[in-house]
Image 1: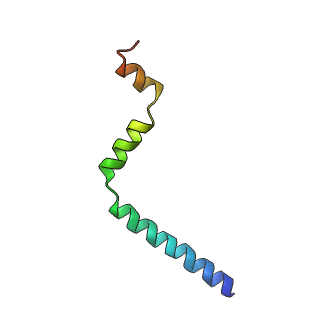
Image 2: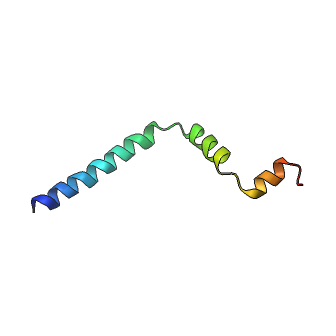
Image 3: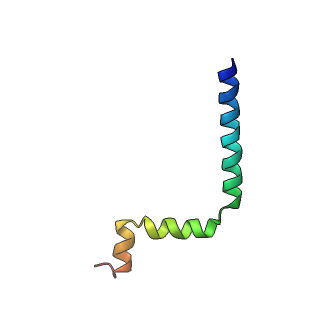
Length: 51
């Protein structure tokens, strides 16, 4: 029973931490990092003039 309570507290604690981190993220910086890191082949063709 004690292990179940500890597991529940851990899950709830992780959920709260993830919510705080999500609220504090700079969403524009994340968007820029993702788009610059994960380019698709179609994006690269467009940047090179389609060649």
